[in-house]
Image (tube, rainbow over all chains, first blue to last red; front, side):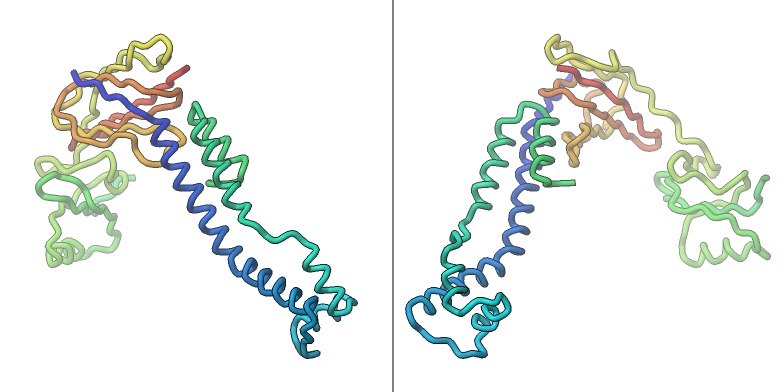
Amino acid sequence: MITIKINSLDRKRTEAVTKVNEYFQSQYLLGSMRREAHARKRKQAQDVVDGITLEDSHAFVQEALLRNLTTIEFAKEILSKPVQDDSAELLRQSVLLGIENAQTLEDIDAVLKTYGIGG
Amino acid sequence: MMKDNVYSAFNKDTGEISMSNIVYDDPDGRYGKLLAEQEYTFIKHGGPAHANLSNDFIWNGRLSDRPKLKVTVNKQSMSIKEGNPIVVKDIPKDATLMIQVDGIEEPLFNQVLEDTSFALEVDVPGIYRVTISRWPYRNAVRKFEVRP
């Protein structure tokens, strides 16, 4: 008679890691355009603070008007906000660590559920 | 109510039914001629309904029940701490064994078994499902609860 040894936990971990990576990949793609726009706006804000004058028709000037701010006030406000860092990678690593430390199949499901990953 | 005009097409080597239709308007067996033209292997038979594609097959030219696959298991549940694996016996040779656990999409094991019995050892608790298939038997499905 043969003995079949099943290592479910490793299989579950592998499946969960794939789900986590797919989730963060999709989030990154969604967020990348926003990050690029944010970086572009910070550069424009720095230009304004450095004394470069923008045309009245420039989107940066128009947005300042929409917010009832002068161009320089708007630029300073943007520069006062923290730079968007890659906190998503830190979060991804936290999830992966949770999966690695899980001792049961339910533990892994709980980690995924906590972060809203998977079905 | 019995139907007279039931046509079931099947694989001539295995008897596995691929489709089964009740034909209400079938002058001169026209539907049978159509199936023959399309090179289907089929039989025309009666019955209360069309054939059940999962539970029936064609054997010696007749619609027949697929036999049940009877396997023997030593228990329905086990504890990892206590050991003593689940043992499944009386499996026909060359049956396909699939093992799944709730919460994992892909089967944990899916292979043809040369042995007629096996012992199952698992690493974590869960509800495990063992499916043994061997044509023309109906699949034997057994669920096991594995406790810590």
